[in-house]
Image (cartoon, rainbow, N blue to C red):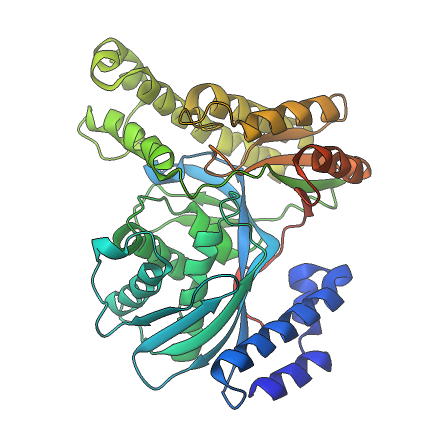
Amino acid sequence: MNTRELINSIESGCADEMLRVLYGENALSEQKSRYIKAIGEFEKLYGADREVAAYSVAGRTEISGNHTDHNHGRVIAGSLNLDIIAIASPREDSVIRVKSEGFAEDVVDFSIYNKPLTEKYNTSESIIAGMCAGFLKNGHKIGGFDAYTTSNVLKGSGISSSAAFEDMIGNILNHIYNDGKVDNTEIAILAQYAENEFFGKPCGLMDQVACAAGGIVSIDFAKEGEPLIEKMDFDLSRAGYNLCIVNTGGNHADLSDDYASVPSEMKSVAAKFGKKYLREVEEEEVIAAIPQMRQELGDRAIMRALHFFEENKRVDKQKAALCAGDIDKFFEYVIASGRSSFCYLQNVYTTKNLSEQGLSLALCLAEKYLSGKKAAFRVHGGGFAGTIQAFVPAEHAEGFKVYMDAAFGEGACLILRIRPFGAVKVI
């Protein structure tokens, strides 16, 4: 279809079933307008006579396992109904052009930009080049395309706008040039490769997998490059709860050093035992070696390692609780995870600017409002700034939103749902 035909198809209801699945019945009209507007923007940039299709990649929420993936730990995560969408069309050359709403156009010639370049670190161009290099490395086809993207996955909010963008580039390459045959898990692994090698950030794999996989999944990263992914049949809405994400207004953009220090310090502890990752080390070994490590690595590195071991155990316990439908036990571990992140992982605020502690304030307010209401809350995502997560009884969700919006601004609190598909071609 060209752009006019794609618009007509959406207006006539051909995409309604998929849009309902991704966003819910109440959002159908809004999402149809959103997609049609995106097609119009593509037309303005790249022409109306192009073969086009529409794509979506979910944002993600980390449900359990705060900062464990990069040391080959375990997590539980879910795909959200916030997403990045793209309208894309193939080209006949080796150029990829991507115009994301609110940002300058990225132009990458993958025949030239095919190796990591330090001067391109931390740019979206590096992600595009890295995904292309990854697809080729794994024996898949690539080619040029033009794309317009728009996203409601909040940047720097812990919902993983960067991972969603990475997966989106892979999603488009997959459907245009590989007939959709590349598995979403492989796309996620290639997204991590692009971020590690081309973008220059030592991230784990949870974000990319959760954005691509769909639904609630447990992920075990014990075996490098081969995450064990298990879909979980748990419906938060059916249990009577809403997932709320509160955006405190902070941003991860200037906190790369803080973020990188977490896996770095954990790995420094593992290195003392001749291992690369903490997953390969026994907790008892670390505890026995604390006197020597305090002098060599410092106390924070040890506490972060101990957080990893306990958080890994909590993931298994939370998985069992969800499978058993035991929401009380699940919430008990959510609270414990949040306390461990605050006290031992220490990723709730940055020491660079002690006067700005939006996450600490949000957690304080959540505790006040939700006290006695059978709810749970914790820091969300990478931390240091961005968002907290709260599991709120449905009858209190709107009140919680009003309460948190009053402190952090209109629209700060989002009442969300888990969607069953991650990276997809919509129509």
